[in-house]
Every structure is written in structure tokens, then in C-alpha cells.
Image 1 (cartoon, rainbow, N blue to C red):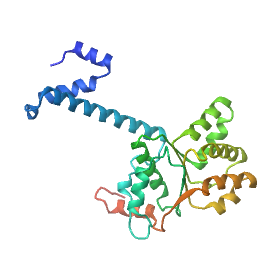
Image 2 (spheres, helix red, strand yellow; image 1 turned 60 degrees about the vertical axis):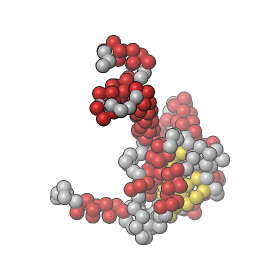
Image 3 (tube, rainbow, N blue to C red; image 1 turned 180 degrees about the vertical axis):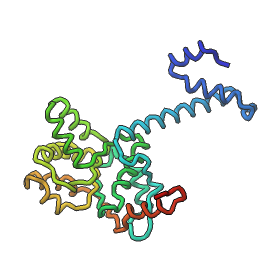
Length: 255
């Protein structure tokens, strides 16, 4: 129906997807009863949905999630985990641009805190939010390296400070040096009362104060994180062991 010259025009106008989808709909005999206007609107809706999906995929990739397929719908709510479906749906639908309360996720190793943090973060991406994910040890390393270039260092601080939702995983599982702690203070101070931060950790505020290298900075950092925060405490079910058990029971498992 459309020629190559037509598609050159569509590419110039950036409506190639609409044109291609419109042509598919017109050729489909199942749509014979629909008017051209209805087919065009259907093609436009499909193009908009494709663009939205592309934006979401780009946001998820940019965020850097270690589990990019994590989903609130797939969270395990078995007894012993202490997770509430309604509360998790609220986190999935949260407007992080207006929310200022931090979120602290606590669980023992293997409890599933990383999966839950990723699931909430990915839901935020689907809702159009800018999310940044970092494991604490990797974040500290990147901050120290970036200090060698003042412009790159400031750009990194700005990116982390301005994300609609900042997720820091494995918080203080290992220690950080004073320079990284200073940068962390700057980021959190900039985000306070403006943007929420999500912390996933095996430990809690009492330990964080002792683990940070400078006591005065530690008090300030921990106060900013914990004084205005919601807490998700995951039970003692070892989800890493449970996933391994399920994998061994699957038909395609081999050893």
C-alpha cells in the first residue's frame, strides 16, 4: 500500500511505526468493518504504547538493576516472609516525585531484599520515574575513582542526588573510606526533604553509626536516612536456598 518513498517521508516525520501498523491493520480482513479513522487511531495507540515500552526499557537499563526482570507480581508472600500484598502494591504505585519518606529494607543474607528493591524500582520505571540503583561497595568505589575528574565527580553526585528514587543495596555490608562517606553525606543532604532514598541492608541504623568512618558524619548520614523512613522487614526465609531447590526440581535441571 505504501511505497519506499512514502516510508522515507514517514521516517522524516518520525511516524514510521504508525504507518507500518496502519498498513497491517488495513490488510487484516478482521478489520474490514472498521473505518479508516478507527484503524488510524488504533495504529496511533499502538505506536504510543511502543514508545512508552521503549522508554521504560531504557529507564530500567539506565538504572542498572542486577535483576532487570524483578516484579512485584512475582514477589513470594509465603508465611514467614512478613510481606503484605497490599503494602507492596502501594510501593509499586508510589509517586516518588512527591514522596519524601525513605524506605529501609532489612533482611538477613538470602532473604530477598535485592529482588524486592529491584521490583519496586522497576515498578517506578514503569510509572515514568528516574531510578538509580547501586550496590554500596560498587558505589563507593565509583565515587572514589570519579574524584580524579572534578567534572565527572560532580556530574555523578548530581545524577544520584536528582534521581526520583535512589536505591542503595547491601548498605555497609563492607566498610567505606572517609572520601566515599563524605560523598554519601553530600548526596543524602541534597536529597533530604526532596527525593526518597531506598536502603537495602542486612543491618540497621545502630550498626551503621558504628560502621561509618567518622562519628559526626555517621550521625548525620544515619539521621537523614532513618528519621523519616518506612521500614520493610523481611522474615527469615532463605529465598536463595529456595530458588536453588526449585531450580533442582525443574525438568531442564542437570548436574
